[in-house]
Amino acid sequence: MAQSRLEKIGTIVTRTEGLLRAGAMKWDERPLWYDVVKAFPPKEEPRFDRPAPNVKVRPIFYAEDKIRAKYYKHSSAQYMVNMADTKTKTPSQHFVEIYQKLGTQGALDEGRVFETAQELLGERLKELKLERITVGKTPAPKASSSSPVTSTSDPVEKGKLVDMQDIFKD
Image 1: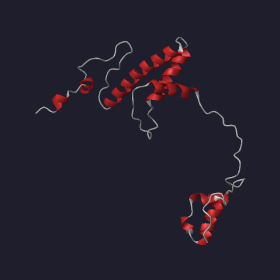
Image 2: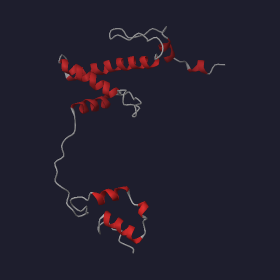
Image 3: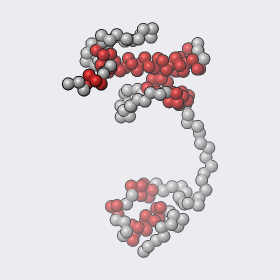
């Protein structure tokens, strides 16, 4: 009844069949893949001593992957991203869009495009944050590229500056 547990003897399918036949594994407790393998058996038996096929692996990198890697390498900001939210773009997606738009204009070299894209990304993220904060309220004025919002009369900007001593004061 006891079969060898050594992976060199038999395949995983034959060992599972042996467990089912011997009653060591109940039919209802069989692995999920067992029915699939029985219905669609592989062309070649999956044995340990079978040589690996010599298949050329195609590169799957895209141009934006290089841009994104450079962004993460030089970016010091850490952002939380909700992976379940597919409608909202991540900061790296915004950066890639800005970088590609600047790159197609052709007026700047690659280093300057990267720096400009980082600056524009910071502005865009500030605008998006203000939009999220002011949902349902009157929208806050958007920052222009020449003059950023520095007014302290804006309640959104005031909320950013909090003195810890004022919080714990009696």
